[in-house]
Image (cartoon, rainbow, N blue to C red; front, side, top):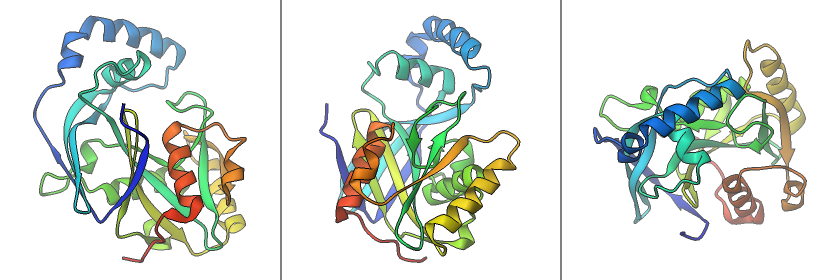
Length: 243
């Protein structure tokens, strides 16, 4: 397993491939049986199309990769049975949201979702909506869409970073975009809570602010979020520049 690491890059170049995921084909029966059990426990699960990372390269300030399509049920089986197929990675966009007074704002996911109970950076899978006119992933647009859906924050209220923070922990790859709001933490949290309260099916149940590494200690978090936030809070991450 590769060591956990966070790398700043200037460019993220992800392309789509028509290749099939051999793991999903070879485990189709087990995937279907697992899906039946999973949807009994979590009826809100939806078997949509997502993309996993089949290969990637990080060189000269550019993170490039090739994505292949996967059904969510196949991804879930892969994730919950130990990620034994190491030919792919779970890749997703993440929003590193800073308030105007320097706090980092995170969400705690509601029950019934994949990261239920965990505190994490708002974001989500890469899916067919994220394909631009040139057949590439517009990862900034993907992150901003997820942020608006989950928190109500809109792109025009945020300063958006030029680069990306790539965090790899095991078979997870987070592509983070830094966003800075124009209000202090209390004002932004109040807005986000109000937006969540008015959603028909909110994904988040709480907004959490952190300012120091010590603030992370009591929070249940995915490994990638711990690694990324410790990196940023130790002063090794960039500050967003408006674009």
